[in-house]
Length: 319
Image (cartoon, rainbow, N blue to C red; front, top):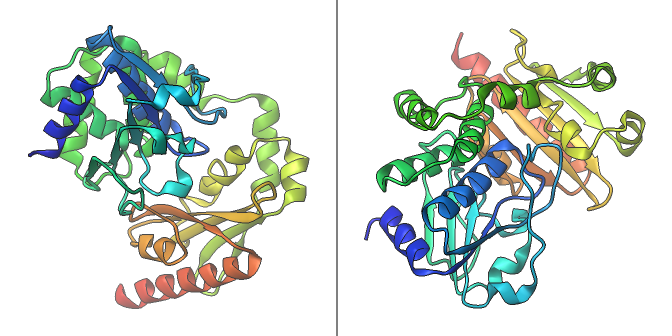
């Protein structure tokens, strides 16, 4: 059976559905989770649908539900934008009767007893996968749901800069805009910031370089405390402070997570596939935008060595 048809039938068959996504969500995680939630509610008002997970400044206007374990009995759990168990926010999906995963990353899943694993890296975002699903089955979409789904597409493509299949992405972006998303309100939320936050970015303006022009930052606990910013705003939010420099083909941001005793690495590249390096260290993601959770600063240096070698190989091949 077609995987999308299988997921559609599971959604139709369950009266109780709980939607998860990854920890420390970005806008695509929230967009795909909350957009799907609102769409199911719009088309099946009789169903009880919930969203769960941790919160940060990327959730836009979404609110998560605080539900008891008992809600998972005879329920369907849907996980969007992640397939690796340690990265899923709220592990109670294991209590559900059926589990569905919808993810556009290249990682395979280690979640056991998955009823439907829908993985397709040709999509540029999980939100795009949800829009494609909505289109295929002719589901109704509210303006609010359209805003989240469009927002997930915009942010995970870097404002449509990083595209796996441009014609498909733009076709689906055009489709979801038929449902009147709140463009200006969303853009104001994502792309404006307080003066204090803008000035705080100066703390993260400097970076170091490897021999073959990999730019990188190492953010320790002290600078995180000094900045007053939440972790995600530094880990993922500051990586592109090093983007757009002609001489820099690869850039990486490493941020100390004291609470979980690890270093979160975010890796980016321009025209160079690096996701295999992220996978080598237990991470994953997209070809040009990926990451990994690292044990210590020694492992960070190993990652930098591998990224530097990749930059060296690339420079040699284009001469």
